[in-house]
Image (cartoon, rainbow, N blue to C red; front, side, top):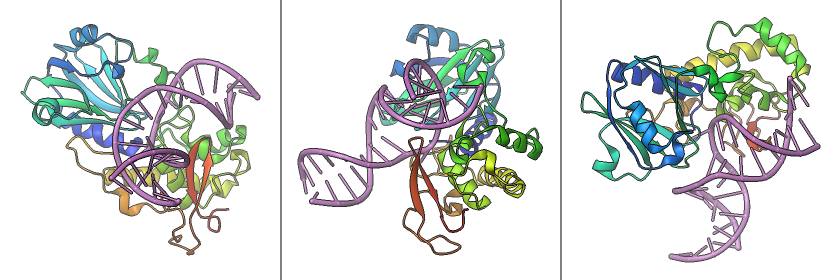
Length: 274
DNA sequence: ATTCTGTCCTGTAGGC
DNA sequence: TGCCTACAGGACAGAA
């Protein structure tokens, strides 16, 4: 489900809502989302924790606690963090897998239809597998065109799956990879090392631009994504190619093509993207 | 070391 | 209506 802009939206919203609050209780309805901890241990360790910071790292939401420990939430495809009422008690929502009771008597629900997501509790972020080799954040100033140029020269993979490689750049997923390449006018199957100086320049600029615009519009709700209020993102009407197979390219009217790369759908215009 | 395939799970949309 | 297949904003282990 969510990529960088959606996770950024969740983290920013939650920060406003839960900083300074203490977790007073935890209800667990499915232990499969607990990463490496039993129901009892997870409950015991989370109860009494006070939230001091909420932020995004890659596609993960990180909660810092006052005692120097952390809760990492990887929502993967269908995870939602919904702030408000207790969704099991009030709506009997079966997707609700974990509910945190907060000290202001509001609840933080973790919903996950497909159960791919993880709630990871740790005292050391560096031990979390996802963070160990995580790549550069494309909306951070450390993402430089010179760095991108050098890195692309070392790689042979097609550019689209490379954009989705979290050890290369952290945060781009299947929707934004297609959107970024369309706006950069780069063919998704092009080998990374063959991109021209001009193409790399466009790619660098467009990547940052698309992600920042999507953050400003609170993300894309293609199907499942919802923010912490349960609301959809607004980037949907800016989407150019993703999910538009067979429909006309907005620039040249050629039908948008769909191919599969490393098991994931890629959408592009074979006339505009070369 | 990089790149790719299969897998985890549940739900929905589309074809017949 | 029902049955069947394909597909879904991710990331890991293990293989090539």
